[in-house]
Length: 68
Image 1 (cartoon, rainbow, N blue to C red):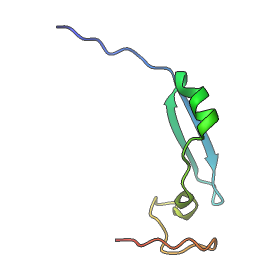
Image 2 (cartoon, one colour):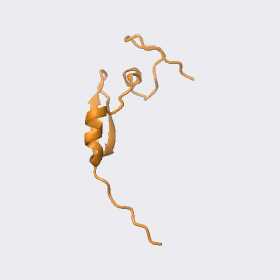
Image 3 (cartoon, rainbow, N blue to C red):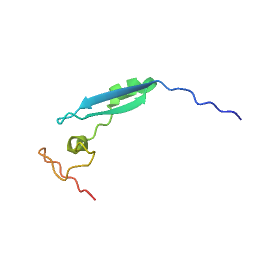
């Protein structure tokens, strides 16, 4: 069997956080209506990520995360 991979159109939603790092979520474009209705699942911990993509042990927003 000779299976071919076909390209899938993708949509990316991005935001730039308070320290200027742009982060995003990508999903197949044909699922856009679902994400418009349900949201994209942004997690509060995104606000606690440092520029090195490490979750800070605490943040000014009161989020405390155990790093381990």
